[in-house]
Amino acid sequence: MKTYSQWFQEHGEKHKALMAKLTHLTPDEVIRYFRFDNMVKHEPDFCELYKENKKCHDIKELNCYLCACPNFRFKESGFHVREGRVLYSTCSIASKEGGQFLSENAIHQDCSGCSVPHQESYIKRCFSRDWFEIMQDVVPYDEED
Ligand code: SF4
Image: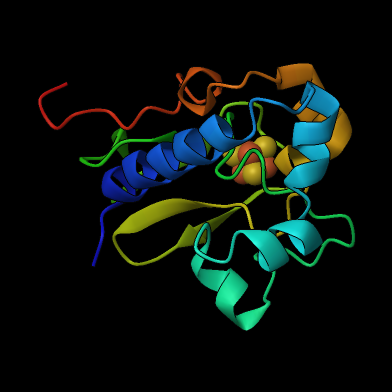
């Protein structure tokens, strides 16, 4: 199974390759191109879920430009231990729509109910053609941090 860091890197590379095809589009057109309905039809390999025509979030106007999310923070080796559980991921803006998955030993950020990065108004505010630039603070920390 892929680690989050591997997925992050691979997804960023896919985003970069797709953006290299879309240089003729304006930022607004790029954002429209990344609407779920268009992506499923024209970019079936961009996301595993597209093959099943399945959304990761039950949002009518789901936009995939900012998958993952610039506010997500992740550390493969964990940030710290809280009440016996390792905190592996968190939300830098403490979104009201976010939550946490708790297991016996771990805490993970739960973004399943959050629409923040999938809204086009938000994407316009963060927009860069370079996904890695937008996601620069998420960058999975290395084990030796
Ligand atoms: S809870 Fe929302 S804003 Fe926070 S990291 Fe998850 S998707 Fe992003």
